[in-house]
Image (tube, rainbow, N blue to C red; front, side, top):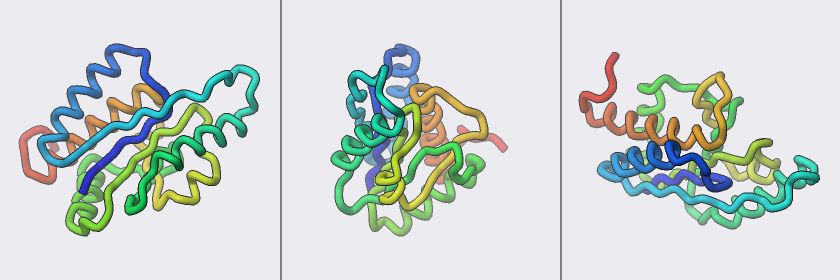
Length: 157
């Protein structure tokens, strides 16, 4: 199994990039992991939100492969504790049938076309984070999940 984090738009924050890179290195000790960055939609200033979401959907759907389970990072998704998220990941590891793709959408969320291919939604918190910061938060939680699965002393209860 491979895990991919698919994100819309590059980050312009050095601390986000450095933090994400640190956790990506750590995660790769446990499982193949990659972050795919899709280009930002251009000329969005006067573009209706719905049109922007559809243009992002074109890029997201083009980036998806065949045998993948798609999970959207969405404020209305299932909220887990860190141990609960580790259990979620472990269930997928045991099943081992499909790669997991987590997607961070653009600022207005996901179009219906993207929602239609997703098998689930995950919320990292009831709080709202910038789409850039979510990269670091998600990567840290994925790393934490693997340390919990392996019984390593990173997570404290």
